[in-house]
Amino acid sequence: MKKISIIVLIMIMFYVVANMVWLKVVNNNIDEYLDKDNISRELISYEGKKTNLEYYIITCNYKGVEKKLNQGEKVNQIFKKSGKTPLMIAATLPNFKDAIKMSQILIKEGADVNKKDIYGANVLFYVGYYDYEKRTSEENIKLLKYYIDKDVEINIRVDGVDNDGNLKKNGKRISLIQFYKDKKMEKEAKFLSESVK
Image (spheres, rainbow, N blue to C red):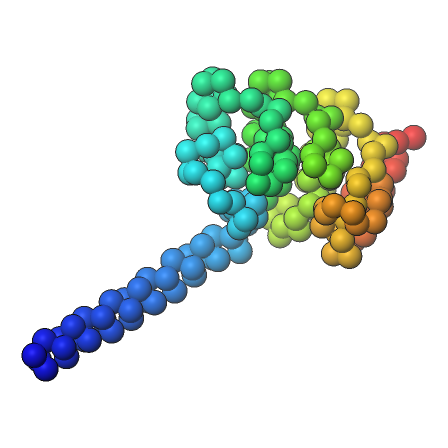
C-alpha cells in the first residue's frame, strides 16, 4: 500500500512539473510572438472562438475573413467583448501592409469608416491605439490618410479616456487630435490637425 501511495505521489508531482514546464514554454512563445508585433495586441484580451471574424482579423487570416463575410457575417457589427468594429480591429494590426490589406477587404465589403464604437470613437482612434515598434509614424499617417480618403470624420470626440490614453467610459472627453498628442504621437497629431483645415 505504501509503494502505491509513493508511486501515485510521484506521478502527481511529475504531472504538475510537466504542466508547469509546458505553460512556461507556451507563455514564452505567445509573449515572444506578441513582442515581435506579429499580430494585434487585441489577442491579449480576446476570449472568443478561434473560428470567428474577430479572431481572423486579429491573426491576419484574410481567407478566413472573406469566408466569414461571404457566409453573411456583418461587417459593421460591434464585437460584444471588445466593443470595436471589424475595421477598428484591422486598424490595430501592427504591420502597416496587413492593416491596409485587411481594411481594403472590409471596406470593399461595406465597412463604414464612420461607425462609432462603444466610446464614440471611429477607426481613426485605433490607428494609434497601440504603440507598435513595427509601425512607424509615417505608416500611421498613410493609414490615417487612407481612412480620411474614404471620408471618415476627423472632427470627432470620444466620450472618455483614462490617464494612459486608453478609451474608457466616463473618462475625460477629448478630441481625436488631443488623443494623439496625449499618446506622444506628434507627427500623427500634426497631420490630423492639418487635415481638418
